Amino acid sequence: MKKKIIPVLMLSVLAQFAHAEYLSTARKSSTLVTVNFKGTSISYDLMKNQAAMQKLEQLTQAKNELANGLNAKLAELANQQGAGFSYGRIEGDPNITITPNPAGYLLMGLSGVSYAAGARYSKSKWGVLKADCDINIRLDNISAVAQYGSSNGQPSGDASFSATPSSSTSCDASLLGVPLNWVPFLGQWIDNKANSIVLNGVRNGLSKVKDGLYFDAGQNWQTGIAQIIPRDKVIKLPDGSTFPIGAYIQDNLSYIISNSNVSMKIGQLFKNTSYFYSKDQTGLELVFRVVEFKLNSPALSFDVGVFDHAQVTGCYVPKGAKQCIPE
Image 1 (spheres, rainbow, N blue to C red):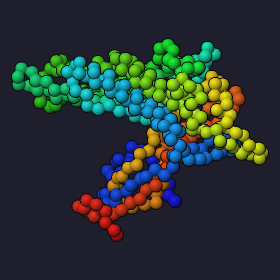
Image 2 (tube, rainbow, N blue to C red; image 1 turned 45 degrees about the horizontal axis):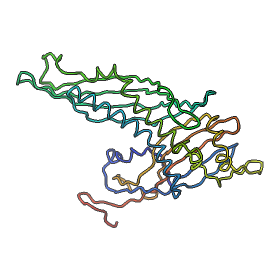
Image 3 (cartoon, one colour; image 1 turned 180 degrees about the vertical axis):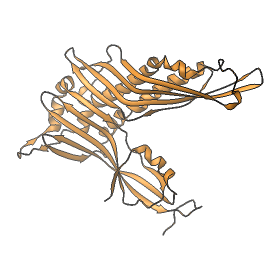
Image 4 (cartoon, rainbow, N blue to C red; image 1 turned 135 degrees about the vertical axis):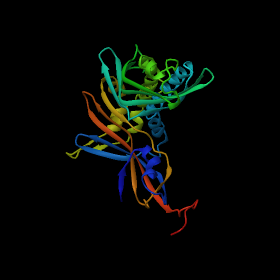
């Protein structure tokens, strides 16, 4: 079977690169987990495990939470300056690190993403001249660290963060030669406000990951890691012996939470979708990263990959037709 690993968002733009004649439908077939431990691995499907899927949904909300926080703040700032918020989006998949410290805290770091946003400003002057300005804002290389208690997951102390801000403003040609000092260059103003914009969104995004992986209403035994690797999972080692990795994790959660370094890359859960393409893609298997993470502790180390798999079927749509017809 043909396989292709593809970012989820690419499905919405495939038709831009070719004349569309086939309607392709991608339907999720599995949420496959692979756990690697001591040179061997185990794989299994979580798609029908409702509790685990809910935890994965929570984990993958980090990107949305970050975008929501940034968009809400930027929309407020734009409104204060008389501009209209146009769009805001997070680019890239978040990299998350979790590091315990001796004082009993977890340090969580976020990197690997950028933020792009736009606003539009219109104003008349002297009853004759009218300015229509597009303001583009970027926060690149976003990096943040927040601290939480390892026993209860509660925030502790302030978050630290940084980004590389940039902005540009362009106005319509009707104002060439006219001083624009009365146009509020929101983007330039944002350059000096990047920290305040990022803070709430970053904190919310990291909290989603923390609670999804480690905590659920303060109850460590209901953690996401224990849902992703259920108690019944056993790995057969190269020497022929077995290791009950699922039971070990659930029986030693407090130790794992307090003593493990975790690095994680977060994607998103796949939703069934349809798109047009120039060729029949029936039989193609698409693979989407949900989350990948590595856990290292003095007692054990392992890595986990969770990927959604989708099967594609296609049907022919003649030019000008609104539905498929048999070939």
